[in-house]
Image (cartoon, rainbow over all chains, first blue to last red; front, side):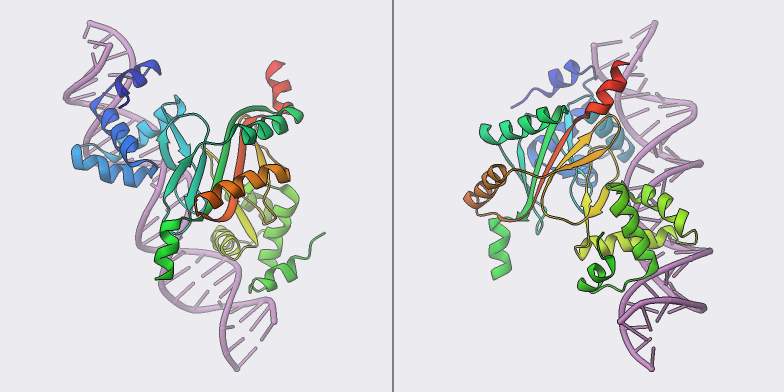
Length: 140
Length: 140
DNA sequence: CTTCATGCAAATAATTTGCAGTAAG
DNA sequence: CTTACTGCAAATTATTTGCATGAAG
């Protein structure tokens, strides 16, 4: 269980109930877009406005509390910021699963960037396909 | 020089002047978003409407003529569809450069997907950072 | 206290749609 | 010819903003 209060304060943001609720939803549900986050959050905090969601998703992404996962053909999803990893994105159900990259793999990308004199900040590896769960649904 | 006419027909789309102009702009300029594509296209075809750009970007992406490159914090860019490759995305100037992945690297991702019983369709590897060009600008 | 965050409503921007007219095959 | 495509304007959806109020530190 993460401590969202200190996470926010370390990034210079006040720990409001609204932010806590947004982080709790994202922390539990994984990768969700703005509308999904809003739909979940108002269940536990009905008066929270959509404008506040927008403002906070933006400021928390910029300050490094959240990270944005842009997805082909969909609205961006958001997750609690963490070390680089691979997203397995199901193009059938839209579900996203995290996979931590092998060191070998990361090194290759680091080397590529270094050889290009590219000051690498973030590696985004998104794998699109159909998850095993959806393959079963399709068959039946 | 690619043949956009046959490219469109192979995907079941009529080869209109509008589509040809959109493809020419994307082919020459590389990765551009909707607004940039529109701004370029009306230079050579002033009557082409923004709605037509939208309709065509969508249908050409769905049919596999174009592919969408979603970018953190920005509107998606579009490129002529080609084999999987790595994008070096400069977070300073926004420029995107293509790099073809080493076979070693691709295999690792293939294996990861296979071990998860994930029916892999598209590998998206986006490297975000500052390109060598922008590093020089920042220093000066 | 003092500053920053919220919530509303209103403004703006982005995208989609319907449909009559046109062009492609 | 026939079907698909375009362009316009209108509708819809998405996102941002200003400002008075309220909460956090």
